[in-house]
View 1 (spheres, rainbow, N blue to C red):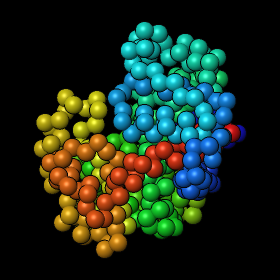
View 2 (cartoon, one colour):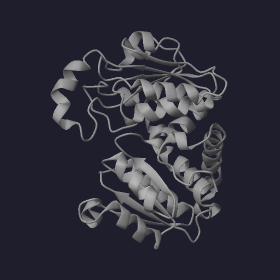
View 3 (cartoon, rainbow, N blue to C red):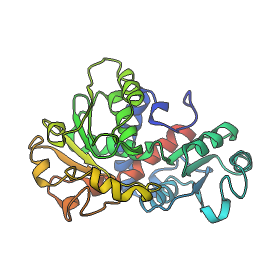
Length: 309
């Protein structure tokens, strides 16, 4: 059992455990090609999937991934629980702890996750909050390892909003020796405490953490160019202002061409075509966005093994 039985943030994982989960996810991809019966790490385990927000990749990858490892996944939508509305998170956590072995929660507020973890007697996994998206980023590391090889020394440029995905990338990459650069318009970058926390997670102090405004400068010598939507779920009221602020931050073939010739393009999806990417960008020859989506399953399987085996 890990020192911290929850995964609310990528920072809950030590650098050693981060690398071990990535390696195990790659092993699982090979092992499970023989069929679901090849994996039984979750046999006899029940996992509650508590979702306040809609999902395609997160829901399907967890449900199928749990089943492949011979576990049981129970989906609970917002209309069934009403977290913090129908009943408080503390009661939900205590009740579910008597039924299941793990709570996977996709929530509106990170505070809800913290309350679930405070009162639950089983591990709680962040399947997305407004503050972080650790399961996505573990899948991203698996994907970079597949397509770029050794993670240490690689450079990732994130173009766009300093949102939950950017924050988790910033905190996770230095733990595996990767460099992280974010390019955002004024007022939309990551906060300085997160950047400093990321620097502290690099034990060798070899990784570089940068915050810029110029996308072209950010992608120079990058091994990976990554973007996400400019307006995340929950920020819809700001959409007009964000579209204006992010003008010039679209990741298109011309911008990607300024990175290394061997660079890959990544997007965690869903994409807002005509905004952060033009139509067809996810099908670009250097794009690995669909492989990135598919790697949610083995990454999350490895996370659940790590917490529950």
